[in-house]
Length: 415
Image 1: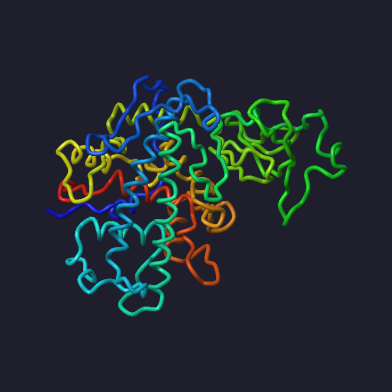
Image 2: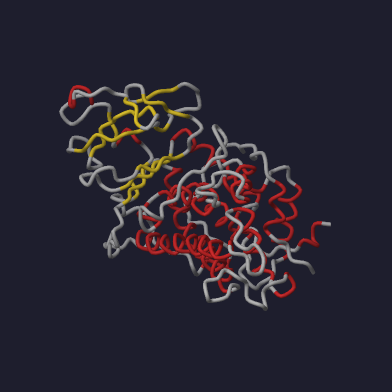
């Protein structure tokens, strides 16, 4: 029986699924299938209001569940990257071991990890003795370093630990919000606009970009001192085009989340905000896929194991659906959480490791699967002639989701 490689799915990219009727997720916790349930941290996030400050009813519960789900997803990603790195010689040449050079010599999981990394993130191997192999292996290790850095942060906060920064290691604090009006304002704590407070124009032009200056409070409670921060855009409140907020700042309906870095030491670290005009869509997707069982929690198969009959049936249904798999993976809230966490020094481990949003030109971001593939091939977003897919937050998130949700499903079942 020939195993089903995740990279086979990559020919299925394009449109998103249609939204199901809005259904509130159940109050009780949802867990992965039994193969991963033991890896899931059990405690609630509700007591950590200083970290997750999102009081938005059903969406808050889905966000809590998604943060819990992120841990085993990234843990599984690390396991696949470990498999992948172990296929290479230990001399840092980037050459594959002599017993791993052909498809027949690799296990299914090894080949799946190698092929998927090449098609989603970046080609790591160019053939025996090729000088590009060394940098290819470095890119894999860079991806693994970020994934490993995320795990203790997830565990720390999910376990409701009192040690919010772990041992800090130079990482800022991070808070997760659902309402930018709680910490951003057109005026400062004294009621002054940016121009009134500084005598400078607002907006201003920085490196060719129009930047809007907003006051960001240094506490979740309005009225405390803060600092002026530059913003290109903010969350929209609905799906209408042409919105502005906070005195003229563009509010783009297509943006589902923002990660704001620590602009000043007097700020409370970094802030990840999920945009309210996308809440219903995430809830609909979760409800629809939970009901249909076409959910990443039901499709995971551990490394070295084979899928159940139910998983084969679910995979067959997914393959026959007109849904395209990359978009299917990307539409889950947990995928957005992992993506935004990749931008965060608190999650990625440092500012130097924080991921970016690459593109293939104006209005062609890597969230488009065709662009993601071209970046992985080294067609777009090169830096000094070298491919940069390993620095892209969307590719990181899609690889993580793909390694969990579609690992080891038999291709022979699709005939």
